[in-house]
Length: 164
Image (cartoon, rainbow, N blue to C red; front, top):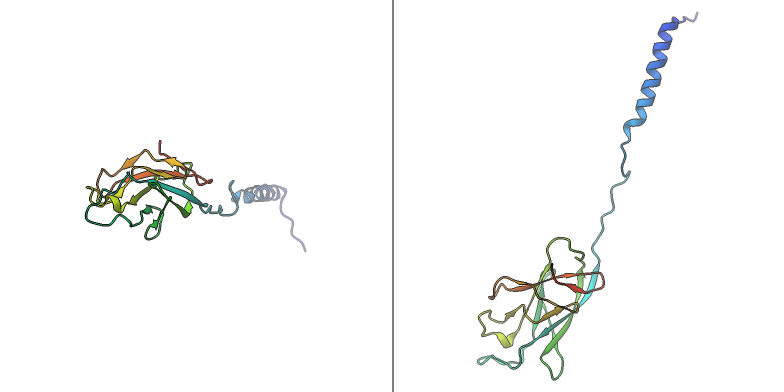
């Protein structure tokens, strides 16, 4: 024999069941269902140009050594620039430079070692007369000694930008 519940008990049970099922759907919060994708930085090639002061100011070492470029994004030693024939301009291409423009974090620090300036107070380290990605760099930091460097941002086209 089936036992019937009184009418009042059944309506309380039905109301509780409706309330519970409506509340169950609320477990999913608004927002992405998957983890956001990690955007990896783009890498570009960037032209580098350094204009050496006219003439060799070195008096004790030979003036035929190459100029070497250094960038803070680089994992290891710098790379040698090539001298334009008949001029005081040295050029090269930095490969796999991570894009950091529009500005995200700090600008890159760049400088060159110029053996022609080895007897200067900075012992050959130079941050002046450098173009990166076609932009003549005007912001330098680190004083005038061995710690001097120019500051630059690099965009997706390999163009340099001075910090604001």
